[in-house]
Amino acid sequence: MRWSIRKNAADRPTIHALTQERAATIGEIDAIAAEREEIESEMPHLREFEPSRAANADDRLVELSANEANRRRRLAYIDEGIAKLEAEAAEKAKADERAALEKEARASEALVREIARDAEKLAGKIAKLEEHRARAQAAGVEDAEQRVRRGPRQTLPAITETVVAWFSPEGKRFGSDMMLDHEGRWVRATDRVQREVVDTIREEMTLAGDMPERFVNAIKLVDLEGRKL
Image (cartoon, rainbow, N blue to C red; front, side, top):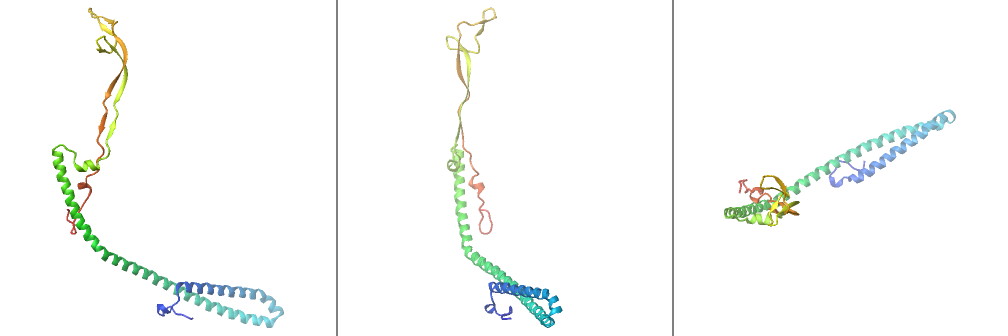
């Protein structure tokens, strides 16, 4: 063989080169098999009519068998080399990734400390906002977080109903044109006028917009030691 998988990495062929040599070796094995098949198909004729050529053909078959055995040993050796190189490449990729992550972790340590400082600042701002909220609620005033974060108000239109009513000349409303006379009998009131009127069942309403969860409840802040801020 022209190479050894036990040599230094710089002296060994690449996976690509071994793959090409593997394909060439398989081609040689296929060529040997084709030649052997051709010879074997001619052997009955040679043994019967051309004994001398039959002897040469037998020698060639022995030679082909030896050549095939050599090619198959070389193929197994190539496969071993490819497998080892692939394993080494995978191990190197894993080591490179670990090294990159170690480097990234060291570089990100400053980010962790920066976040901790920002958390302390944000905790102070939220505490100040909560103090304002307590004072605003005590005074019945909408606090700053509500003003900024609450969703748009929703206006519900009034609910009305058109009905027929009866009215006296003085404008007094009645449910019908019937009335009790001085004897307590129901009689028709001739002076009442019928007309349609619009009754309001519910006045127009304005609903406050939805308020999301407040910062003090939604944001969980801790220091570097994990203590709640």
